[in-house]
Every structure is written in C-alpha cells, then in structure tokens.
Amino acid sequence: MRLPEQVILENFAEVSLQSPILFITSFNFKPMKNSFALLLGGLLFCTFAAAQTADHDAIKKLCYEESMAFHALDFEKWASFHTQSADEQLAWNNPDGSFGFDSGWDKIGTGMKDWFKTAEKEVIKLSNSNFIIVIHGDMAFAAYDSEALNSQNKTMKMREYRTLLRVGGQWKILAVQAFVNHLSGK
Picture 1 (cartoon, rainbow, N blue to C red):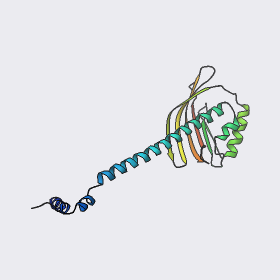
Picture 2: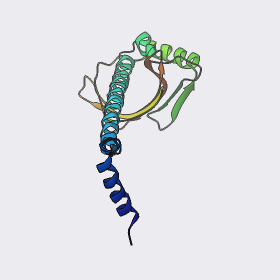
Picture 3: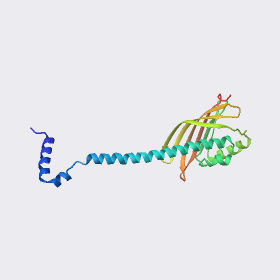
Picture 4: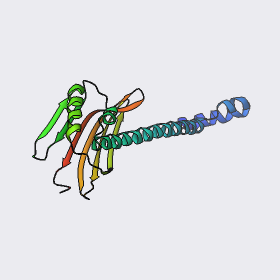
C-alpha cells in the first residue's frame, strides 16, 4: 500500500522528468517565503523597537525636566510639560499621612502658581530610576522611583506615576501621582 506522500513524490518525479518547466514551477519556495517573512518581520520589529526606545527616552526626559521645573519653582516651565486640560489630575501624599488631589487645569494651575510663589526653592540633584513605561498609541503610563538630594546632603525618596498623552507629536502630562517617603531625608 502506498502512502499519499509516496504517490505525490513518485508522480512529481515522473512529471518533472517529462517537463523541466513544470519542475521549476513546482519547486517549493516555502523556505524562501519563510526567510522573507522573517526578514520583513525583523525589520518591522526593529523599527517598532526604535520608535519605542525614542518614546521611552522622551518620556523619561519629560519626567525629569518636569520634576526639575517643579523643584526650581518655575511655574511656566513646569506648566509647559502638562496638557493643561479639564481632564488633568494631580494627587500627592502629605507628611501627616493625609493626601491631596486636584482635578482640572484651572484648579491645578491656579493652586500650583500660588504654591510656587510661597514655597521655598530647593537646589537638588535628581535621579530617576526603575522605570516602567507602557505605551498604547498616543497614551502612555510611566512609574518610576525618584531621589532628590538637597543641599543639606539629605535624600528624599519618592515613587512617581505619570499618565501622558501625545499632543501635536509631543508627550504631555495628563495626570501626576507623587508619593513621597516623608521619613526619608530626615
């Protein structure tokens, strides 16, 4: 009894001997197709990975610069990193264990502008690390650790979260959650 594969191979051999053109057109190009698909997939992945890396770098830079503007009490520069929309959110914890939050740029912008006028300016050395960044189209989420070394050589440790939107090709902050370890830096 013949298996179907044997019949196909025997028939292929007979036909290919009779017609070299049929042999050539019957050649199995699947390995070449697989190689081409693999090559194309690799190029697309590299392009996607490079775009992701550029977005990740831009988000990390934005988080750093926004924090530096905050600590420098530079309201205009700090505000430039935000969407300044009615959807904007801000949440933080306080040294007494309570927390605060504001919704909408009108409230956030007014509150921060007033706070920047009365707060004590600090010169710090800031480092951000342990980033987790998730990007879905024009929206991104970033979580990271921050350490701010002040002029008294005390380090304040924080865990920070940002929700970002891509607006006009630039990442902007839609929401900030900043949690300070108020026991650090004492």
